[in-house]
Length: 342
Ligand SMILES: Nc1ncnc2c1ncn2[C@@H]1O[C@H](COP(=O)(O)OP(=O)(O)OP(=O)(O)O)[C@@H](O)[C@H]1O
Ligand SMILES: [Mg+2]
Image (tube, rainbow, N blue to C red; front, side, top):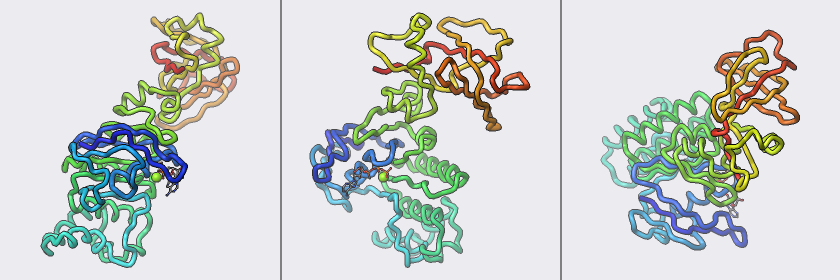
């Protein structure tokens, strides 16, 4: 288990991360999620031993590793910029670690080919120089190089950021199954919420050097603990103005402790004005006007003006009307789905 206890990291006067506390369990896939500059890479560098915390301690299975040199930590990192050896071949880059560890030559040959296959690098590519590969291919070399030693802990800093959408999903699934099969404790950094939600056992959401929430993907999404998390993850509607204008419609909300109110866009129901629908308990209806429709194939996204609040929602089935623009519609929301913040 990895434990961060009150870790603060400063660059001169600037506090990059502040009093971080979290545990990563053995075999867990743990993700740091947050916008650019929030301290994700800095935190990873401290774990790997490339940056010294200003205060606090890092433990690995109850052993204090805060001051332990990098090479003694058995943690492999894939960097945001891959840090490959550009003039060496792909094969030699991947084989670098095993060679240093004096692994038998035949064994290295076997391991490198095995891992290359897993990340979709061909034998032809193995004999090329790294500098002759595309960004996405280099990224896969970096992942292969980290995996070839089967480290106990794998640290990946935005390892898929240079890949096209399709390869990204393919490699994402590959990473997940490698991680499961080998049971490698993995710390993964991304600012891509979809990646975080699909891959992680747990996610830590960072904002300005602090962790706003730690939880399973479902907890982070369904019960976002702060307004920042709610806005950073998923798509939400800011219902604050509307709720304050009609407080009598929302008896289930806690107005004493909360002033900001949101809903996830997919939680809303939408009807044309001539469709009949009887409200369930806790449901509230608003009349609105449809201002925009976007067809995405798998769903359709509707933009609705309720007085001067703009609401978006998605439906799998299109609304049953020909002319949609400026039509009157009814939006139904369940008060239990309202996310409330101070
Ligand atoms: N060596 C350094 N010296 C001074 N400030 C730094 C240094 N490295 C990082 N910082 C600052 O610390 C903050 C956190 O940086 P960090 O690289 O950890 O962010 P990040 O979350 O990884 O962002 P990104 O998603 O863009 O990679 C930023 O404001 C950055 O400017
Ligand atoms: Mg970074």
